[in-house]
Image (cartoon, rainbow, N blue to C red; front, side):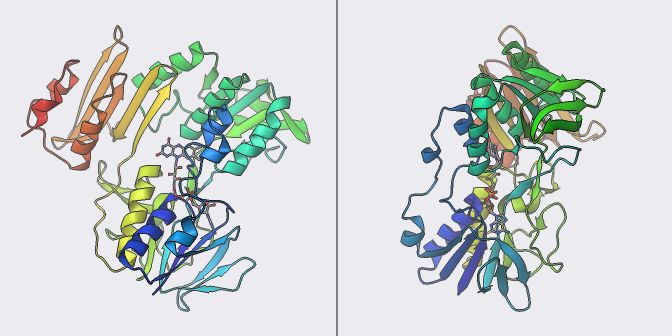
Length: 409
Ligand SMILES: Cc1cc2nc3c(=O)[nH]c(=O)nc-3n(C[C@H](O)[C@H](O)[C@H](O)COP(=O)(O)OP(=O)(O)OC[C@H]3O[C@@H](n4cnc5c(N)ncnc54)[C@H](O)[C@@H]3O)c2cc1C
């Protein structure tokens, strides 16, 4: 059996390992356009910040491919999939045949299409190489502009602030991390960022950049101008699927079933490229996060090797430390206010600096957000993942001294 994996990220790696565990003699080939060992993408911002060396990023050792009996085809791009002929065309190589294919190509940053967006020193922070290029520009940079208040924009702004740059952040919504937190928590985060010197401007965007070769300023949607010599664009991602043939069903990402198989038998997808069912929302969704990419890779790999394993669905979650603010979000934290089956419980304690929010849908916990005092987060994660009905009055979850032991049946 010949297995071919497009993508050398965590989803691809976990799939390859799962296949090898179940089938010691299978052929496994991995194509990756980054010519490097698999590495921790969430941690590249720590290299920017200067608290981690690039050599600490790899998540597998130098002998990984050899020990696993994987044929790596690195620094090469898959450009087309021939479904009928069961082979993948790769730039600069002969086509590679497969019996089972995994699409684990991750995501690409959404590009900014405004005047001047091709100037030097305008970066997208997705890869190690992007961070290397940003680091090379740092010595001559004084004023940074970060576009987008999502995870990537936020991490870039934090890293640049810690490097001593003046940083302005433009957010189209009213508060940062709008996909991860609600307005109240967003306000707490905003206050923290501003108190530490970040210039945050909400409900505003860039209309054009100017500069001679290298960016030197931006024109904003309110008509004002902002001086900047380094820009990071963090406007979200979209699945990297330029090679995907028309026969494979796709919505936001490649659509997969509960075994992570696509609409074409023998072709699977996992990670940021795949669209699965979201456990909390109970609808199709792309949760582009590391732990889900790893889990999906593992389960796709097992199914590719012939063991039928069901993927229960994905769940968004994140833990962040924003200066001295601990933030944990799980599942659906911004439910549709029109949804009559949803119950929202909240408690903000300004003295303790804590905020707790729980979202129940049809009496099942579907979302949790904790600001400070996040120790019980793991427990809420498992309740949401397992769709457990709460054995107590949900209001009790808001009590500061809530004892999780009370959740045991
Ligand atoms: C700055 C940053 C911070 C993040 N922080 C967090 C965080 O705090 N928590 C969290 O859970 N997640 C975080 N993420 C998201 C997380 O990194 C991703 O969800 C995860 O890496 C997805 O893994 P993957 O294997 O699906 O895709 P990827 O890691 O994107 O790997 C896919 C690989 O396939 C390659 N590829 C793409 N197209 C082709 C092609 N045609 N041919 C060959 N190779 C190809 C890509 O170059 C890439 O190397 C962050 C991401 C970034 C960029």
